[in-house]
Length: 514
Image 1 (tube, helix red, strand yellow):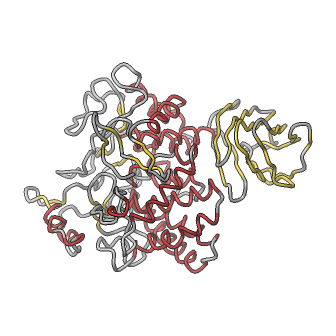
Image 2: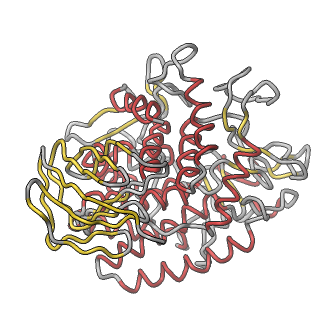
Image 3: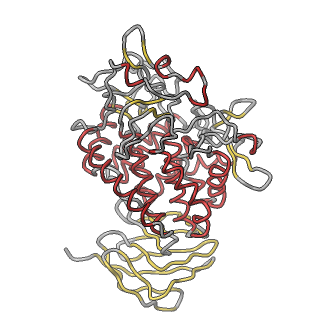
């Protein structure tokens, strides 16, 4: 996990990434031998890339600013590739996609929480709000949720480079997390009516998803593959004749809708819950259902050897190498004749988010197996350990590996309330790097002591969450004892601490008696 987290940071120094003349961050998805692969800071791919947000948060915030200024159309749709030159890029033909657009809202919430900058959020809020409203706007030709049901039911472009039709937890989950994030941002900005609306829609959607999308083991796509009528009634995007779903997605040979998941077990079926837990939102789905779904993905999609796994697509794992495929159809599940693109492939960026999600749910052993399989593929013998591949090398999605560090240490953050914390998923002792907003350093935790050190920058700290089940006995900053009180696992300091380079706090702890 340390290797995966650290080695993939090389992607940020690769030709995948660049800065524009004003210093703003811009990127491809990856690199080919002589050119970039898939330009435009692709929103649904960079959804997974958490390293930049924590290590270089100003650069990450510049991506939000560019997206909302140049990628939003007159109706509130966010085109998922930022085109250069910037002003001409407003004419982009890249349609809005659900995970990209909703992910942008979640990332805006995350970036506000990392920075604590309410003025930054206030400046973006009108467009962030409008992008949320696009889900039910009558001007949305893809009709994501016209009835404000909390469920995405329309035509749903996504990171698989295709459209889903019919409710599914993958993209509806993004919608529910974005509704949560929008409500909290609206609260902070005094937009109470919109906050209430988002919470109402979210509650309806969460209930429906739990009752209708979970098959008892994992989440599915609710679709009638034999019904061509679900492809009809969509407006052509910008009038393009080649945008007719009834022509593109109907399989005349098998009389079935193409490129769908149906009853498949997808690696990203609860990816929105991973985002939510990392960003400090409430769980998107019922935790028991989420745990069951993750266990099902490991059971059905993880392979210790790829020899018996037929893959007609791109090969990122082969022979005796292991990996976790994007989608499987367990025994008894109907497999579409022409399923979603890339289903048989292994994408390390998805594997890392899956492993981090397993960690967040306390499933450490399967998480280790997933990560070990990836790193054995990139051990320096057959592949470059500093350049993981998908659509090109140095692929951005692999930066999801940074969340392994966040999940393993149980790192929590909130610059708005000047709080941070640690809830390790492994037995103590723990010694780890941390980075938050304007500072970075190291934390060391034993059963007797927590030492938080600042190696560079300045850290404001009003609250510190201790590992569950521990009580603080004494807290010192340098030679000075601090005044504080503890509520449950959180220590509240009597005044906001200012920790600069070289400074630390030491908390003497004891286990709470059960």
